[in-house]
Length: 404
Image (cartoon, rainbow, N blue to C red; front, side, top):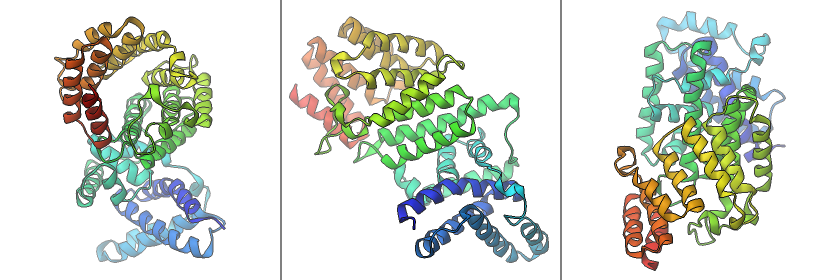
């Protein structure tokens, strides 16, 4: 018999497939999503007691479809039409029940007419299978606020008449970029939480990686999708070494590399090797290549910083932005000295996009410390500590300032 965690993993995998099938058949996203959530709750209780059925996907489809029928029976004016449609389309009566609509569902949840917060919430709820309470905790907002956000997103889908179908070829590349951006944002929020007492949220990084893996399976020919998955694997491989036993942040150079997940590194490198050179190079592939250089160095001193700098220079051409420039400044400092890195950082001081980014001051402090300007380094560490809402980062930066 499957254990409870195994059942939860199975339900999370099947949830978007079942929801996608119902939405394709009935077009009512909100009603279908509610029905699937009820079916998942029923499955969690019944399967733990009686075991997983032979066809769990069909079981969920049947229960969710019955939930829809029950809901529609309460609406007298629509009872006959909706109930008949649902009964005629119960799962297991034709090959259509085997169709996987997960990709279509993912594109719908990441529709560009929805705000980014709505895209994130709806993706985690409908495709990721997370509860509203779990999503609210992940983004440090009250559950009621998150529930309203998800509800408004569903209403927007209904009001706009968004069709449950893959976007046309002319729009698919742009829509795919939105999907990948949403998964990337979920991963980043999990890897370094923007606020709160913990440095990372393993549930979010795990879920983002699972969805990226699913997207890669659905679109194996997309090089950037493979690059995104490789980037997540190679980055998350260092998770166990990012904090010490007391929860203090450990910078990359000081991390115990024996704690890095070698299986994830090997998978990420192999995935990247298969992809590079066979598809147009994009920002996710370039970031994955940089992560691979870090991960393959046996020690911090063996890191190939000239290669990393060269990769950042390409990345800045492919996807320019202040964060890329800031990361390139770190590589410049490693290759050409801290003063060269500080000069590059100075070009970001007037960029409004970095006005409230504590990492700009944190990197400046580190380079000033390396350059021997101790007083200026201390002031930058203190400023960076005041700017971040992440308690582990604030504690680390304050300690660096105190030591100076």
